[in-house]
Length: 125
Image (cartoon, rainbow, N blue to C red; front, side):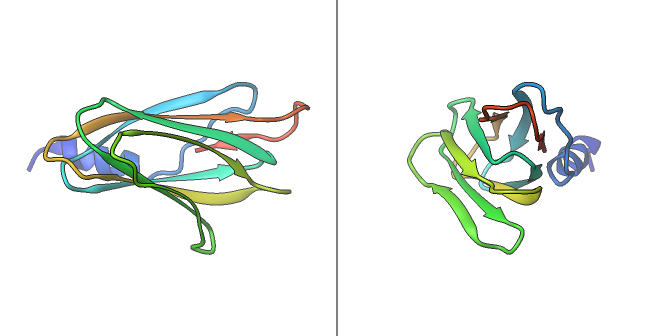
C-alpha cells in the first residue's frame, strides 16, 4: 500500500489553522469518484470561500455547519465555486465536502478570506 493516499487522507481530515490578517489558501486532491472532507472554523461574521479545481473533472460542493445543517450547495457541471458564509457572532465549525464526479483525480485550491470592515476575528481551516 502506498503512503501517498494515506498522507492525502490525513491532510483532508485535519482541521487546519489560517491566520486572520489576509486571505489564505490550501491545495488538496480528491481522487476519482470520491469525496474529500475539509473541516474549518470561522470566527469572522462573513467569510468569502472560493474553490478552484484543475478543470479535469466535475466537482460538487457542500458546506455544512456543526449541527449538520447544509449552508451551501453547488452541483453545477464545473469544478469551481464561490460563496460568502454569514457566520454571525463567535466562532463556528463547518465542513466542506468536495465530491469528484470524474474518472481521474482533481487537484483543487480552497481560498478563504474574511469580509470585514474591521480587523477583528479570524479564519481557520
